[in-house]
Amino acid sequence: MLNRIKGQVAVFIAGFCFSLIGIFIKKIGTDIPIMSLTFVRVFIGLLFLAVTVPFLDKTIFHPNRKDLKDYAIIGFLMAVNFVLINAAFLYAPVSNVNLINTMYVVFTFLFSYIFLKEAFTRKMIMAAALGFIGLSFIHPFQNEYMLGNMLSLSNAIVFGLILVYLRREEKHHSLAVTFWFMLFTAIFLLPFPFLYGLGSWQAHIPALLGLGILSTGLSYLLLDYGLEFITADLASLIIMLTTPLLAIFFAVWLLGETLHFSMVIGGVMLLIAGLILEFHVKSARHRIRH
Image 1 (cartoon, rainbow, N blue to C red):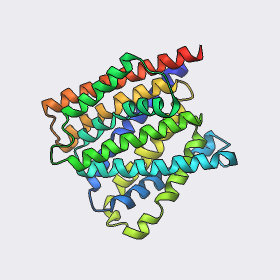
Image 2: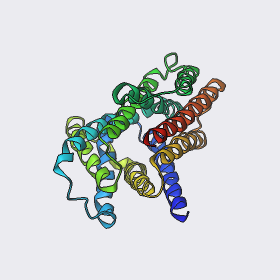
Image 3: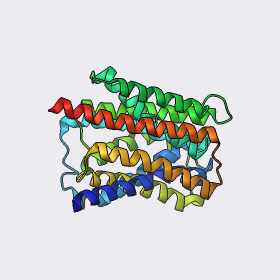
Image 4: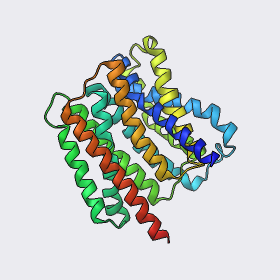
């Protein structure tokens, strides 16, 4: 029981750390080119993991060579994922980005059916439809934030692909595996600081450290730690709820963002759709195993 609580608390704190990404990006703005900023974020997170993980997982520097190809593929997808989500925060409000990003649950369901041939139920189809209806209430194609909204939606698609690929290859989160994912992500992003420069990074050291340590290194460390004590399904539920809700709270409080009624309705629909899909996908897998 105590371990389960420890796992839930760790994942909740990870969700809190993830919810601050948009705040840090907004504070930095365009002073650092977004591609370079993404590298810096990942590199700082990687350094944090390189320092902390060896104390928790002695296998970190002894990967299975057969897994390196998968680590590289996931690293590439994560690089795309980080670029899309970071850029989305530049061109759309934090609230928009976080709510639209919850569509990853819907896309994970769709990709699981397409690529993994997983079964689905009528309720799961209705939940996916509810997600798209909720998305329409946010009007992602019809306002001045269309570019940021589209980047966030694209990120949801890519993140859905990452989750399905991990499931197909039966790759499980662990501290050592996450380190190698992050290492390959940093390698793919390495050229961009040389191409675009680092801008006025000296003026944003606190935000860069917050983005790299809190919202990248520490968040993944806590998530992996929590997964040692609770199921991936429960962790996904906690992250799906805490991250957007806390992000919206901080955006309203710290950035002065406002929420329109249609966005609230759409956001509620998206979260309900995500909850239904998470619950029914978990139940379907449980029936398959037994």
